[in-house]
Length: 310
Ligand SMILES: Cc1cc2nc3c(=O)[nH]c(=O)nc-3n(C[C@H](O)[C@H](O)[C@H](O)COP(=O)(O)OP(=O)(O)OC[C@H]3O[C@@H](n4cnc5c(N)ncnc54)[C@H](O)[C@@H]3O)c2cc1C
Image (cartoon, rainbow, N blue to C red; front, side):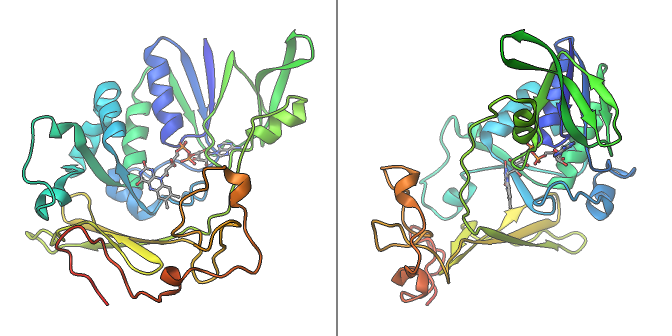
């Protein structure tokens, strides 16, 4: 079968390799340019990637992702290890700070990795590039879906795609791996299909990351607990590849946040309503709650020895 994948992000590339190993021919179409030659550091320094807003943020390959890679795509982990990345464990902070009284059998299932995303994508691209049956075509945006002969009455059948250059590419199956802003829902509706049901909510989430590189022969210091929560900003200190530590800071819409219609707590600190999203819509004119306004001072995680600030 010829499978066409829209998007060469982590989903598209991982899927392409796995499908090709199952005996399929896979073509991945990606609108952005590919990684520059020179490996992970070159990807980090000079890979323009406008298609992915979070490209410069660190990515934690959490245990489930890590396990999937180890089982299905161990070569990707080998590539990352070759770039200097180390494996960590999600429980390290809890062990370091004494929240857990010691390691237990089975803790290895919490193995994870913190990667600079350009390195992760470069590793996936390398593995895809040497997998027989996978073709990755970069700088090739998909503009529309191609309708084939209907297989069921009044059900449009997708037979391929049209690229931004007007090229028709036919396939037996088209997979949408174009990310959260995927245009494929719109393209399906243009064909006369209902399109997927999508729910979107504006959270006002903002993220900022700064990277630090330790001097030759030294390792960056490790805080006892990786995350710290201030009034409206949370920071995480992540150990990346050897000598690199990232400190992402994230915030919600505090400062001008919206309260749940039914409560007095704001979007940053109230859990979603059990009644569902309709009950949680923004309430114009409502104000942030006392904690998110800063009335209680900075609060850090309270379960361990990380110092509480005031
Ligand atoms: C700030 C931030 C931090 C995050 N941190 C983590 C983390 O620590 N760990 C984690 O697991 N996840 C993290 N995520 C989530 C993670 O980034 C996403 O889950 C991941 O990017 C999804 O990968 P994807 O391949 O599905 O989509 P994407 O990465 O969005 O890739 C989609 C690809 O499709 C391409 N494309 C789009 N439209 C077209 C088109 N018309 N034609 C051709 N190509 C097209 C895009 O250029 C892009 O390359 C974070 C997200 C954000 C925003």
